[in-house]
Length: 350
Ligand SMILES: [Mn+2]
Image (tube, rainbow, N blue to C red; front, side, top):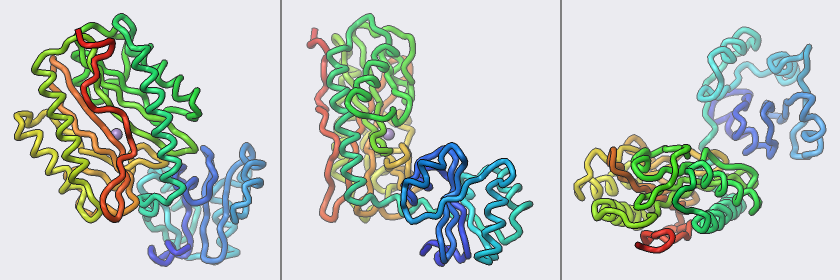
């Protein structure tokens, strides 16, 4: 309701799934919140009626049906609450939906963004994300025992995902990346049918959703013996990750942290080989603001949970990325991930 004043509107219609969940605690593929100065409504359809009514979250539940679309409901409520302006989330509403609202809701429509409150995590969110990280880490440790030459990337990825589910995850937070050998130079090399060979690097980028919050971790391991060139790449990325952890603090901008780590990697001889952002926030969504990249000039805040994930990618040779999740505190950081970062030789160094 405070956001109404801030945005100079009489009402707002929240439709983005993660925002609906954040503001109401109701998770559904079809639910909206209509917030007026007097009252808050949760609008969903028949499939979610029973669940919504049981939630008891202070929202009055309204059900859409064949003869009452969302815009019909919003119009009806207008007669009651007499709003003359309504905020819509322009980053998420499709063009056709926006046009439909314009046609059917006869009030001033304003483009709003209400994601900012999600940037600072409260204690319960921090605990849930820690649990999501712990599940992913335990599953990864088991996967290292499963990993061997001759298995496919997909087979290894499915094993990792299944271990996360067995440990209580609801789903993966994104498609698991297992990129081995030359494929490890693909920053987002989703697991393929390629078989794991000896003398390769393998990058795992993985995470799970637990109680609707995401974890996000990357580790690169070696199988067999890898070239001195790749060992140097690994050690450079590991040092860059450490520099990121020593640098990132509340009060800095994401841009500043990104620039410091980027310079370190470029100065080590890898200019142009690290062309994605240093990190991003995690929460209900896997990629949230604030981001650590060259266009993010606003200050990081206490309570942000951000990733630090430098990488180096050499086309045709291989790549390395190491990613930790970090909570920003008043007086420093808490590194939430705890997996080892020494170069691990799976099955022992040959
Ligand atoms: Mn990430």
